Structures are given as structure tokens and as C-alpha cells.
Length: 139
Image (tube, rainbow, N blue to C red; front, side, top):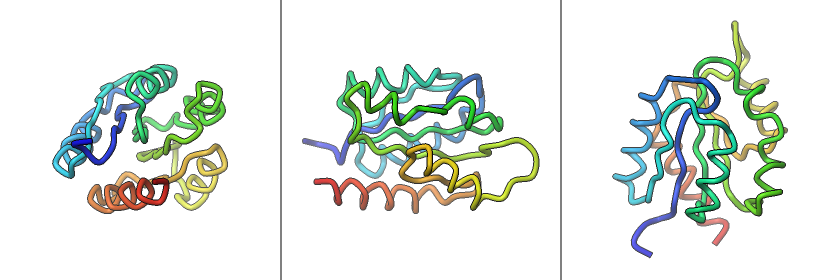
């Protein structure tokens, strides 16, 4: 293997805010990961298909338009049904509309099966270190 793992990135639903995922994807590549960028406005099912096709280790999903809960309800279950129960799920961004308590959002999405949840101001380098550690713990 000539990379640290295969990672799927993109924005979910009808979210067109793709700059963040471009930055994350570049940082992941620079850190030694193989990255499959799905881009903006990606239906959840496309993340699953891409992960199946590439034997992905993780999916890093971005949502900045506030509709992540609606877009990703049951996502972990769909991953499990597709044979992806071992894939890491990371989510970051503006996860709901109006003023939010990030701790509540984090608990909600972890309850939906996400391994890690990040606020929009999260440090990309710290998230990559989290990913390296989480992947090392699974090997």
C-alpha cells in the first residue's frame, strides 16, 4: 500500500459549499492519503457507492447549509447494510440552522453513528491526526 488509507470527501445533499472539502482533500493528500473527491451536492447514496467501489477506510462529509440531520438520518444504517460497517464516518460544518450548541450537535450526530463531529472552525491538521489515530486503532 502506498498511502495511509482511502478517504471519500464531499458535501452532502444540496450543499454547494465545496471550498472546505477542497482544502480538506488537499491536506489529506499531502498527509499521504488516497482521496476520492465527490464534490458538491452529493446524495448520501453516492458516498456509499464510492466507498464500496474503492474499499474506503473513511468518509469525511461536509455540510455547511444546516440540513445535515435531514440529509444523513439513517446514514450509518445504510452503510452497514451496504457492507461498510467498518468505515469511519466524520462530519463537519454548520450542521443545523440558527444558533447552535455544538456539544448538542456533536452528541446528536454521534448518536446517528458518526465517529467524529467537527465545528466549522475545526483545525484540519487536528482532524487528520484524529483520522490517523482512529485508523491505526483499527489495524
